[in-house]
Image (cartoon, helix red, strand yellow):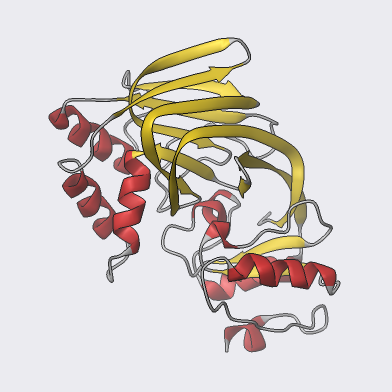
Length: 265
């Protein structure tokens, strides 16, 4: 048991609880807040725990697939070293995004990446190679969608391939769709990729995966604090890597400094 061996027991008592179904982690985290715990450490997906608005800090044990938020916060991907980050106990306040009635910490995706996340979730093999293979394979199955984005007097519309609303920089696996995104700047970075011919989409997916997309003309970037996105048909939505139900209306906003997190200094 890594926690028993490496957690600093002069600083922390701990208990371990296991999730039993999707959404159970949020319930367990809320119970921990009510019981007066100082830290909730999640082992798994970034978005599976919610301690927003409390004095309880979120820590991450990198058991997930992409570990996007953990990487953004500087956590090592080795479990022993991640526990050492918790032992040091450095915390900071970070912004939290909200889409409709759900919070997100890293990013959300409307469209192709949410479709990929749905397929990836069914795979037994994990890792970057599996993710890249599924991304390329899914291009033949995915169709673009009409969209309208309204924010602060700005209106953008067209046919979408991906719309990412980013609080942190990456999907996971160090794939940074929004390299300049910050969890402490009070804004969300929006990356819009309009519908593309399939051959261009293949090239762009590979560029994004391998980090050669920073000046790509196919990606339109804006910053928002609040926005409404509507689509012409129900579109796939992923929140911090987990696909949720389709929707046609997405109301998005930022909550500055709403979550305490343990970070690697």
